[in-house]
Amino acid sequence: MPAPAHDDLGARSVPPQGGVRRCDVLVVGAGAAGLLAALAARGAVGPDGAARTPAADAPSVVLLNNEARLGLKLLVSGGGRCNVTHARVDEHDYQTGAPHVLRGLLRAFPVASVRAFFERRGCPLYEEPPGKLFPVSDDARQVLGVLLAAVERAGALLLAPAEVVDLAPPLAGEDGPWRVALADGGAWRARRVVVATGGLSLPKTGSRGFGLEVLARLGHTIEPPLPALTPLLLSDEGPLRGLAGVTSPFVLTLAPRGAPPEQVAGARFRPLARAAGSLLVTHKGASGPAALDVSGPCARALARREEVALLADVWSLHQPDGPWASYLDLPRPPGACLAADEAPRPPTREAFLAAAAPLLEDRARGLGNALAERLPRSLVQALLRASGLDPARPIRQVDARGWGRVHVALTQADLRLVGVDGYQKAEVTAGGVVLQELERTTLESRRHPGLFCCGEVVDVTGRLGGFNFQWAWASGFAAGAGAAATLARG
Ligand SMILES: Cc1cc2nc3c(=O)[nH]c(=O)nc-3n(C[C@H](O)[C@H](O)[C@H](O)COP(=O)(O)OP(=O)(O)OC[C@H]3O[C@@H](n4cnc5c(N)ncnc54)[C@H](O)[C@@H]3O)c2cc1C
Image (cartoon, rainbow, N blue to C red):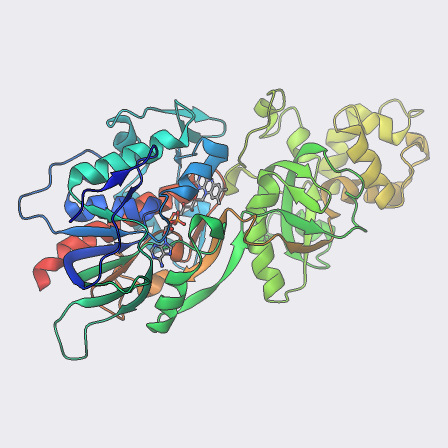
């Protein structure tokens, strides 16, 4: 085997070879999930994240990546800083069809293990509100460097470019290996295969949906993929038109179209999705954490042609005693949302009027000016105008019906959602192979023993803030360790 060549990012490549080669565990895709899976399959990382020396009889592990340059998505993540994980993670931070299974997997390789993994390998992490963890170096290259060095030290063979074009299970009735075909004509025979090929988002990083296709071909149920953590597209007729560039904290609620305001504000109302965080108005709609966090459920609802409305509450997070109060004076708003259980529901009309009362005492003042004491002026004016209210109208001239409109304008404005941006902009792909068809601790296929899945190819989608990498690490660990543990089965 020729000596691997290195470039400055630690990428290694081996010239393509013909013929059939063999290994115990073959990992397809060297992203976050695949790298962790390779380490776990070699026994080079424990469930506590600590480094271990692989045993002399540890499985032979090969990692194949279609792109010559490795870790492209890792390198662009977190704006080049890589938001490695989040201080507090549980199954409620994700969209998936099997939250109970997800809970067990997240606990088996928790945040503490991820912290230990990086920190004990010379990459300390720090916390940024509200809980995002980044390398102290603020450099995603360091994160990738740690992973590649660990893989090399573990003795796993990483080959790139090596594009897998087909996976075939052992022939019926045979206890033989999986057959893996490469684009360059090469082939591998592997006793276990781990699919870690990611989704469809940012295709230039190498994730172009191969895993989803091959798993569907192998008979797995695939929750249809959709772009998620992506900007929202809003109608030009919506209330935010003309406000491009404005940033403000919002609570966004995805609700059935036509749900009455008092119902949406009620304690028993269960929204289709809710996100509470900063939002940036764009020329096409909205971006920023709050917009990105609801984009997955929005995409799903629109794809299913459900009658939904995206409602904006610009009021709740501006309250001095509200859950966002500690962030209001930061020079830059937090780059992630509050957890689902911290996101406030829109206030009832009575609660809104009671909280607004101190602003409205001077009844000769214009409505817009008074509310602009607490909210961005341009936003207040646009929202009032969009609901037919003149911001210059003196407070004393606003009647009961008018207050009803002010309440809805500021706490449940219909943003006129028309779509979400595509895979070129999406940070993740929602959907994927359903978790229910994988073993709950090893992520082994229930349809094809010997086949394992991890990372974004699985139907688990995190919110913004490090949750998607946490899933990649935890699922990569489960699949890699599972693949190695099942080798004893023959
Ligand atoms: C711009 C951006 C910023 C992000 N920032 C963050 C962040 O800060 N924090 C966070 O938690 N998440 C972030 N994410 C999401 C996160 O990067 C992904 O969820 C995570 O990388 C998924 O890991 P994965 O290993 O499953 O897939 P990927 O990282 O997509 O890796 C899949 C790998 O498989 C390879 N591959 C694909 N097909 C084949 C094939 N046929 N043969 C061989 N190899 C193949 C690809 O080249 C790739 O290397 C961000 C995403 C984007 C796009």
